[in-house]
Length: 610
Image: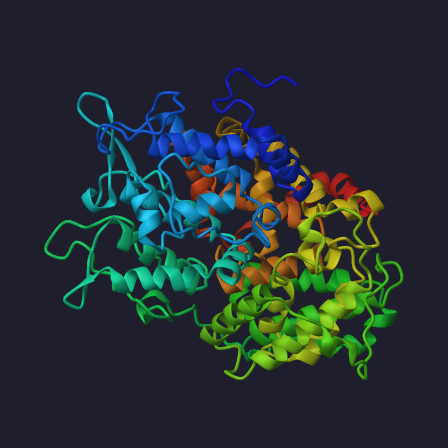
């Protein structure tokens, strides 16, 4: 296989594409590639810059950093970009937590690397690191910074020495990047208790009752806020990783117990969640939805609904929120699922008197996902404090229904054990949108399960489904990856060639981000209103709008993508930063242009997934 000479990271794109899938990452693991990558990274962090097998410390930790360390780290980020890959490499694998480590002991797997660099919870682990602060901070989050001095040499500067405004950090952080994926974080927390570990270290890092401000405490604070506060760019505030000039170099409050201080939670934009339309009770869209009973005999009902949707998104998109948007989605899905022409799958069935769902087991990761959903919904003012029982019951019902339409796994992949690996973020999104009404949420989800769009916006629905070809179902590779993401890349090459080229130069792929965003329904990347508008556009306008929405996001991010590619931090920017300033209503005309040009190809391919 040939790779372009100008590609800076060699076979990076190919490795990234393979590592995005569970069978692919296991093939890399079996071949010894993962061990070789971790060994190379460890040698740059803890050993000399020479290709030597003997473990020995560097002369000084302040020497210029080896650029190949960045390359190794970005390769590791690419390897762990997919939550399915993380589950395959980490699930059911405990940390060693030995009583002693020799200086020659080199990690050989991802759990070993986490044990040595992230879960540094004993004196034995601290004493086993030549460069404790540098290596542990590397494992936690983004600290090192490369700057050009007057002699054009790159200098390594710890976070405690970085004043404000001294340039963009490289964001070398394993745990921080992993926690950007909600499903990866749920696995780390449920299996290793990462938050408790970080909070304990914060409690220990004090003097006379005051937190010690250093590189490690600043990075722990950042990670704890990232995982403790959910929300889009206008809904949460992540503390910076550098220090400010002046008398108070770090004005952000640190904490050693949950929850994080309120200052990290921003007030969400105010919408009338009880709105039934605009100030006119006879508004067009409200009156139209009120006539839903006549929709069964009206072949043009969906087209008329799309017209009202476009009009409302163009004139006053904020009105499309709360009860009005819930009503719109509910009735659109009900109408489409009642049409034999629109039913693509056999629907998941559920009987009200059925008791089997009560015995369904939810994993510790799923229970943590419920806690995250409840906190977010409560902050948005959409869920009551006692909504946990309803959400738990909803997820059990959904899991029971979907399990009947899954194949019996023949492979040994861990991601096939106990159903879908991760939390059902689409079901949680619907539950919040329906303001905690579990019965209404279940009805919508069951109707949605018969539609083509469910295969793309609802990962848990299509995981190992009997509706997919047997080989595809057993691989666990979702249609979002081999269909949606494929056409996103095709459209980027035609419509946004600079963005497409930037990804190639970075050794990264747009497919990774499409899979990442869609798996958690854009949680933590878009504000709640935009998440709802994204979902409604895909359901009402067509499944291919998921492709157009992803292309629109990349178009919105194009200036940043080009800049970050030059700085060799594209992967870290896309994963760690929310999508600021993106509004579905602003890009809906662009999506419609893409629909006119590409629907015949894209939608046809989506319909051929069976």
